[in-house]
Image 1: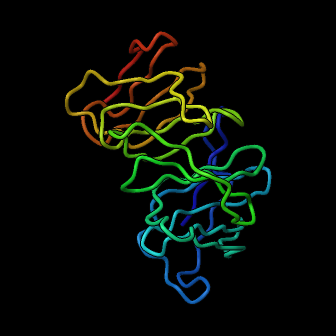
Image 2: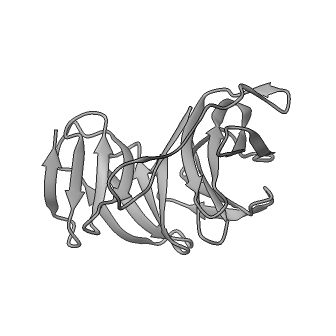
Length: 195
């Protein structure tokens, strides 16, 4: 089931759909992350154990799927930018892969060796937030892989699972352990912590 909310507004359900289980002869197997392409009104799902990305329409029908290709396995994070480039994070490698919207491989963005990318959030065409599943924070990187900023939780129990920009423009992180939500100011300091 997909549920999409409109960012920056009072939460309201924008789309609600359930997807078919079998897409192009393969059952979804360990779907990890969901991205929304508001321009095309489509959902992108990282289908980890089938090594592919599946794109669904707002009714939950599979519109398109593409394999990651040789040597690219186990997608975890997925995002799409305003130019319809799809960014996919590897589950067990310090790398992001870039694809065009037809599934053609465009290249890779290398991350520091200690980073295992989790969920992704596109800030702009050239800027991406990457949840570091192996650490306790998030990175803001450009498409060359250069780290622009990074936010680290001081909570030893922090296990980051998602990142977003809050309604005041601050970067925020969701954790499945420790503080549930942590907001960071522009200087990297903690502006709020919930849960």
